[in-house]
Each structure stands twice: as structure tokens, then as C-alpha cells.
Length: 95
Image (cartoon, rainbow, N blue to C red; front, side, top):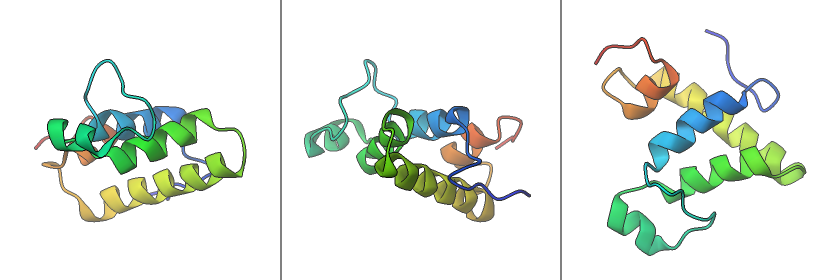
């Protein structure tokens, strides 16, 4: 399996991670309040990391893309088909 890096992870993969982290619609603002995660069981830190990776244009975006790549690598290494993140990154996986 190819490992993701900040340079190779694409926006579609980051969007898949973001969408699992927070299924709320409309999408909340970045750095959403802690009450958001408590009320909706969302992973606000992962959501915010993905938004930065998709929207920022500087070193902050590179760092966030790196973190997203590491998360994707970790999902493939440690998760199983029952994981929502695994299924989002590997749509043909069957739980």
C-alpha cells in the first residue's frame, strides 16, 4: 500500500475524512465550539484539521495536509472495515 504524504494526499481523500468527522449540515464554521462536538458527537479536531488542509494556502495548510495524510495512513494500518473512517477511505470495504 502506498503511504500518503502531504504532497500526495488529494482533496477527495481529505473531504472523505472531514465528512466522517462531522456529518452536520450545514457545515459548521472552523474552530467550532466544543458544544458542537458534545451535541452532535463530531470529531471537531479532525474536522478543523481537514478544513485547514482544504482552505489554507500556506505552511498551515501543508502541516494540516501532513496530519491528514498521517491519519489516512493510520486508518489503513490500524482500522478495520467496521470503522467509518476506513469505509470512507476504502468505499469497496464491507463491514
